[in-house]
Image (tube, rainbow, N blue to C red):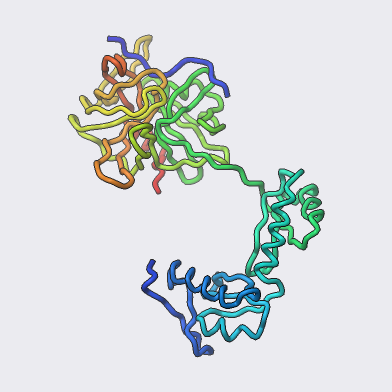
Amino acid sequence: MIRRPLRTMTAVIGAAAAVTAFATPASAATPVLNETAGPATLAASQQKIGASLGAAFAGSWLDTTTGELVVGTTDASRSATIRSAGAIPKVMKHSSAELKKIQSTLDDRTAGLPGSVAGWYVDAPANEVVVEVAGGDSAGRAWAAATGVPVRVDQVKSAPRPLWSVVGGQGLYFNGGACSVGFNAHDDDDHFVITAGHCTELGGTVHGVDGTIGPVAKSSFPGNDYGTVKVTHSDVSTPPRVDRYGDGTDVRIEGSEVVAVGGRVCRSGITTKWQCGRVEALDQTVNYGNGNIVRGLTQTSACAEPGDSGGSYVSRPSSGSGTKLVQAQGMTSGGSGDCEEGGTTFFQPVKEVLNRYDLTLERD
């Protein structure tokens, strides 16, 4: 029986609609709708008032201080109508239709759009169309000015990028090796991806399925088999999820309670995807050869193969509909056999790395 860490050593290229809440100002005879009315009631009121105002409608919003529903109008004579409907009237210069027309003009002039232009939108309370430019870039400001429509230019810190998620069981790529994501965790300041130590010992910058995650932060192998990757790229999100691949939707991490010997567990990894089995032993010392001895591992009958290293081990999801909640168990370390003939696989309990590095698993 050959036991080995499961790392692939190949080059990697990088409504409460029925309940209405009112606040009654002393100066007003009609109760005013506020935020506590709930989204459904407020949405219905906004739609009804907007339709009644027609071309004079100038947007609606909640006052961030009082929570009251405010409705804009270009016709001051319609203020009484707005009050009688339970909202606060505000007379504006531009109608909603006018502002939307300006926005549409911007939408149609995206040829040569500088990357520094983060986007544009209608600021209803200000009664303006806003163009956001990263860092106040001159090219972005020039584009806004050249559109020929009145806009307000706001400076933002950076331009947006599509967000992508690091999910347990998906690919984790090092310089010279492919492994799998274990779990996402955080301390007071930073976010981390937990995986196997014989993967993080490769060091360097680590990539996921959609881009760069960040550098290896800490690593422990042999003796232990865990390590962390620090998330340094702002487009990376770290949800508490594990990929079940073809077996259904992702499962969500609820905690890290340990499954006892004989209990059912499942694991996820890039090579053999979602596989399940039972816990066969706890706190086992495993000899991977060449002096690589790891202590404190859990033995299971869930098969795994090279590339699955570091992938998530979780409690078996319960049956039934809805999001499946699971308990995080550990990260795939190594084993023997394969998923055709069957085999024995070991995982590094996740609680040890959480305690060692003072980390907390991500939770919704």
